[in-house]
Image (cartoon, rainbow, N blue to C red; front, side, top):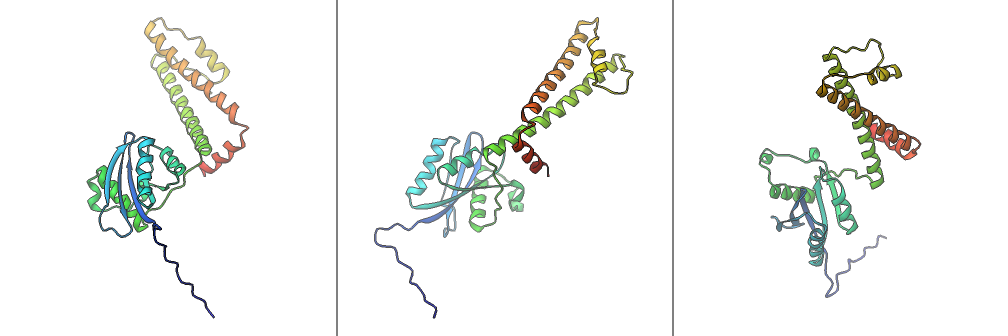
Length: 238
């Protein structure tokens, strides 16, 4: 026989938590909020505050004090993950969404902070937003290192090309087939221009390349034995 249990009614004086959906349009200096409840047809409130932890905490604590259970979201962007992590530390349920995964309409061509916040709040309530994975701080640090290393490697290659094109324009051609060997560096180190400005230009190209090469070698030496870096590099590049 199937047994049905009666739902316990809240006792007198017990506050029933209401859910509120908060959309945030986040910028470096400001955050625009818009929120609505499960049953509200229109936005309950809109507000803009300075992008400061004390003000953010005050905003969400006020909602909690009013008896709300909070769900919030914002678009991933240039401000990174600090806000997400801070909200999590406050116990606020938050998701980050990829801008490219947000449903769009023709009317969305007119963009304002207020409109964007309202739209996110509505989509969050309707369940039409897909959250993205937020890496741990350690994993993010490794990814930043890998990006920086790749960027440095590209910069080094471009700088070397600029140096060789500069020398070619001045009629200096390296006859061997391989560049950046011991003999090539010996050839470069013997350069001297009579014109002071040309010499300064050569020194600038050459020293810049050598500086970046030293940094690249130092980083490779420091992290090449790091299992964490290797694993995340494979994951990131897959």
